[in-house]
Length: 430
RNA sequence: GUGGGCGUAGCUCAAUUUGGUUAGAGCACAAGAUUGUGGAUCUUGGGGUUGCGGGUUCAAUUCCCGUCGCCCACCCCA
Image (cartoon, rainbow, N blue to C red; front, side, top):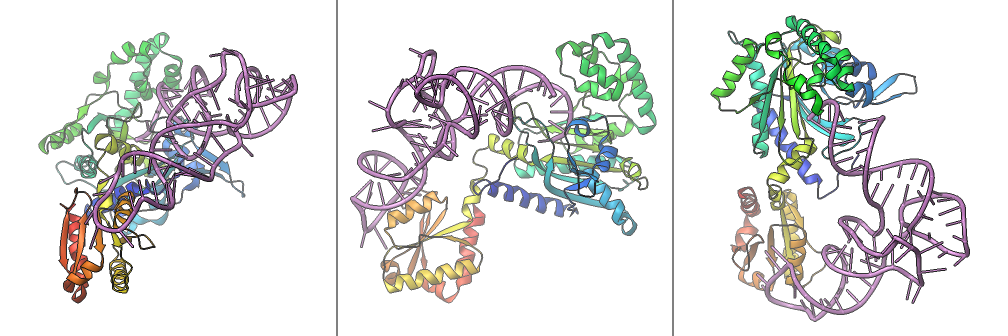
C-alpha cells in the first residue's frame, strides 16, 4: 500500500475533478459507502469460487465476532446501499458514480497495489426506449466510459467486448462447455481442471500454452452465438465511430456479470494492461434480497489510468503548474513591501495560490526559487515598478524577456478584480 | 497460493567476488560566489542502525540461518 504525497497528489486531484465534472454532466450522482462491509455481501455477489473471494480479501472478525471485509470492489456495496435505503422506491432508476480505495490482498506487481483506487459508474434499473430495449443502456455505459477516458486524455484506447449470453441460456451454455471440456480434460492444466468443476467460463482466461489449442477449438459459437442485443449494441458503437474488438474469450472474474461485458486496455502498463472493465449484471439485486433490477456499470483503475496517461504523454500534468503565482519583491523599500503585502492579500483572497520567499532577496534568487517551485507566472516588484506605476508579469515558460508584460499599476489599485481576472484568464488559457 | 530477483544516504547506484583503516559517487537539499531577469558552473555544508534479528569471527555491508519488506512474472483483476 502506498502513501500519495504532495507532488503526486495533484495528479489525483486533477483526475478526480475531471471525473466529477464529466459524470455530473451526464446526470450521475456521487455515492460514498463504508469501506468495511459484512464478508457475506461479497461472497454472495462476487461469488464463492471467484479468485477475489477465495484468496484476495482482507477479512477479519470484529469485536462482535462478525465477519467483516474491506471492500474489494464497489458494485456490491452500491447495491447493498440502494436496497437498504430503498432508493428505488423514490425514483424509478438511478445513475450513480463513485471513487475511492479498494482492497485486495494479492502479491504486488506492476500496476497492482493492495490498496488501489477506482472510479466507477452504475446505471441501475434504467429501461431503454423501445424498440432497442435495454441495449441502449449498454451502449450508453460503454460510450460513457470511452468518452470519459478520451476526456481524460487517454489515447490508443482498445475496447474489447463479449456476450456472455442471455440468462435463459446461461445454464445451457455452461453445461455444453463443461461437456466439451470434460472430453478434453486430459489436455488441460491443473488450474483449468479446477475451473471446469467450479466455473467453466473462467477456463477462457488461461494463458498456459498447452491449453490454447483446446480453448481455441471450443465451439463457443454453436453454444452461444452473439445475441441480437449484442449486434444492436455494436451497431450503435459503429454509428458513433467508437472502435471495438469482439473477443469471445473475454470472461470476467466476478460472478454477477451476464450479457454484454467489456474491458479497456492501454499500452505502457506491463502485464496488467486493463484500465477499466465492466458489464451487465441483471440479477445481483435479487441475489442480495432486492427486487429484479437490471443494471450495468464499469470501473476504472485510477493508478493504471494515471500511469497510462503519463506514459503516453509525459507533459500531460504540466498544466497543474499554471494555477499559481510567484511574488518577487527584491528591494527592501517601504513602498515595495507595502505593495507586496497588498498583492499577496488580494490574490489570496481571490483564491489564487501565491508562492514567495519570506525574505527580500535578489531577483535572480527569486526567479530561481520560482522555477524550483514549478510556478508559471512571476509578479516582479521593485522600486522602478513603483515609480513607473507598473508591475511586471513574467511567464517562466518562455525564455529571457520574451514572456514579460507590463500592467498599469493604477488599474490594479483601482480595480483588483481586473488584475485577478487578468491572471485567471492567463491561467485558464494555458 | 506458485516461480524468479532485490534490500547500502531523500533518489539512482558503488564497495560484497577473496571479511580488514573513517562505507563512496552522481542527483537532490542548504549556504555562498551573484542587490534588476530563472533552469548553468564552481566552492562549502548537512546527511548512514548497510531492512530487521540472531550466528560464525580478533574483525561482518561482505559469510551462514531466520524474518520482514519491495520488485517482476503466473493466477486473477482495475
